[in-house]
Length: 80
Image (cartoon, rainbow, N blue to C red; front, side, top):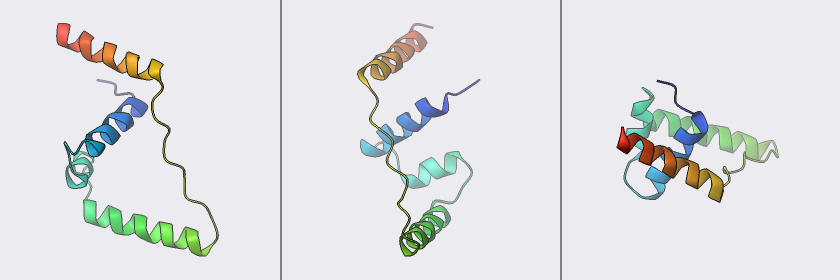
């Protein structure tokens, strides 16, 4: 089954923001160790700061249209 990466990223962000999941669980879904990944991310952020580089921006909140599309998908799956 094809999963839209943008929708999955938004779903993951929602799960994390609503405290219905943990970083450990989200990394485990990808077969990764959360502590290793966080340590790597911290190293990357530190090096970027040392080099005067800006960190990538947080993804924008979904627009109203995207919210409606996601809601429609959920309703469609419930009906199936």
